[in-house]
Length: 161
Image 1: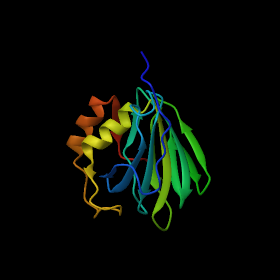
Image 2: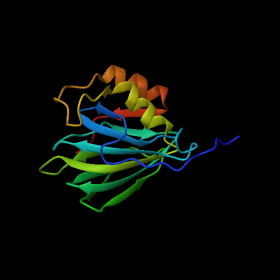
Image 3: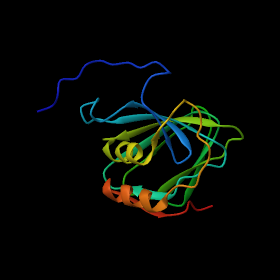
Image 4: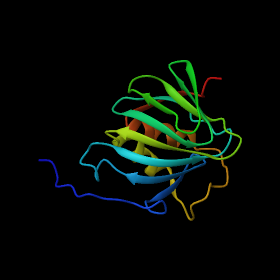
């Protein structure tokens, strides 16, 4: 049975915030709050930040750049997007992201159904003490790889240039 859903809204300062892989991630919607439909994250990244090259087995992702610039590498193809840019990255296709802006950049991440990325991110991340970028630190790749496997995400290696 599908749970009863209610309209909901959040201001720009609302939603649980996490420091994850040196980003600030603010959760705006979860698959639980949307009846399994999607999760929505507001992400702030500093210049040069890059995800590992990876692929999701159970969810698709869409990205909408709010400000700055991000380079998406999907199945070996590069796409550079600035404010207002959008990209859809389907499940089972390798991809990764680099913040190529000259200043911190922000985007929205829509994951459908959204259980994998958000679950992994909240387990791996640390609740943000304030809504600022964290002090950069190398990620615990062993923990990241283990949590990604739990949520059906494969880490394939570093992001290709």
